[in-house]
Amino acid sequence: MNYCDSPYRYSRRTSRQLIIAQAGSDEIRIGAGEPVVVQSMLTCDTMDTAACVQQTLELAAVGCQVTRITAPTVKDAANLENIVAELRKKGCRTPIVADIHFKPEAAMEAAKWVEVVRINPGNYADSKKFNIREYTDDQYNAELARIEEKFTPLVRLCLEKGRAMRIGTNHGSLSDRIMNRFGDSPLGMVESALEFARIARKHGFHNFKFSMKSSNPKVMIQCYRLLTARLRELGPDWAYPLHLGVTEAGEGEDGRIKSAIGIGSLLCDGVGDTIRVSLTEDSPNEIAVCRALLAEIPRLTSPDVSAPDLPTSYDPFQFERRRTVEIDLGMDGVRCGGEQTIRVVVSRATWDKVAGKIRPKDDVRPEAVYEDLNVMEVDPAQPFEVPCDSQLVTVKDGCPLPPIAAFRLLAAQLKRLGRSNPILLKDCLSFEATPLDPQRALLRASVVIGSLLCDGIGDAILIRGETGAGASLRLSFNILQAAGCRSFKTDYVACPSCGRTLFNLQTVTARIKTRTAHLKGVKIAIMGCIVNGPGEMADADFGYVGGAPGKINLYVGKKAVKFNIPESEAVERLVDLIRENGKWVDAELVETP
Image 1 (cartoon, rainbow, N blue to C red):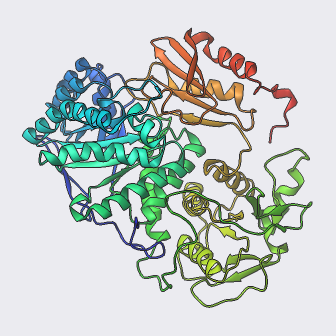
Image 2: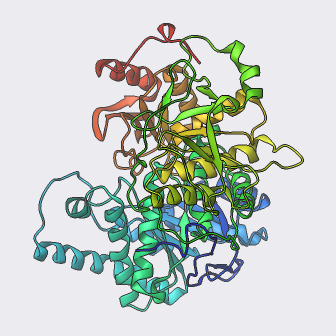
Image 3: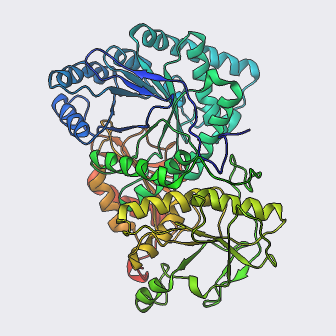
């Protein structure tokens, strides 16, 4: 199966066109070669018409092209009429998407008023009880018939009113039926979406797009690749547009890095027609990151790469780290390759600036100096030989290939030669006259290094686009953590807030980080409501989930263990829960990096 034309040459995926239009709104054309559309989501209560209108106006002012609003109940969905009417009165023509979970009747109401309805196949017509049971083929088909009965009225209404739809599956919110046949897997996410697409097509409805979201960039990338490959197999008539996003990415640097890895990797392969960067911040911040990320993609791709079309060294649909020999990097016995963790290399200039500030127990520290390494630099588009498997290899500076293509080709060439040399990844192969500003440097390094790590390529990394010595060192470790390659600090999965949220996510996230930021290797999910609760937390160790207004439920993994805790007590009760499960250490005993 192929998900793109070439892993080395950029070619935009050809998709069907989706049209978002309604009287009083701008017509947005998605797919079919149109520029990638950026969107965001409101964080206020859907019943607060004035707040929804104000937030939508603020988003439109910074370039948001499509705005999503949650509609958890029929009452909320009905109020979309008032929100849309007020926006049109004020001259705002931004199309509105109703975000639907659990209630088909809310979707039916929302479709009367908004241009797009987003449904999640995992909870639109199915229950999510984490039940374990086997389905016979007859039982499975009976469930599909029940789903068709519930979903068909919405399809017909969208046809009648000229609405668009997003069929959006999320990792961790798959139905019990899908889970028990396909597992909590990319394949399960794809099959769940295709079931609903087949029902839509059966009734002649094609004005929809897909999304495959996960808080784990690796999983997200695999899902979209698998979906795209399946759609290619089904034929051009199935080439529906794709919406990209890493869900619950978090905030700050971490949220931007995770989003850049997942979204950027796919965009560089020509996949994606709309995007959202989900941040636990004010919504307009998301649009700035979307725009900056889109601006980087042409600089990291080329349709005119002169390179052999070798088979890739990796399986694009299932992560496996490339197998290499283990070698000594020469600094304090640090080794890389083999079963060793991915190592962080710095330039001599960076080493000179940070070496005096490194303490013996610091986790964030350089592990080799580039200029001191015995590293062989090659142009992978040209023939080359390596003397032995223990030779560290990288792409030489000035290589005319884009960096992702160059390192993929390097790994493919080594595979062709039967070599298992460790590879040093670089975020850039040439330098611009003016140093990159910090956000560009962060996004570029995250896309390049993160994409390759998610392909299983790379045994050490070198970041040079970020000129600040300490910043480049921190960025290296943050990319490794976001890509799931190395854990040096607490990992947070935080949803971006919406009208369903039952507490102030930004405030609570900051409070939880203050108490737990020293817990290296612990993963904590902070979810505003039950929709983004046990399923969406995926592989988190602990969860803090809004259960009701002013009440919090606490989870260990996907299991709720504490219910209806007053919000004023919940953070300390979370700390108690971490302690009870043997994952707590006192902050004063930890050397903070």
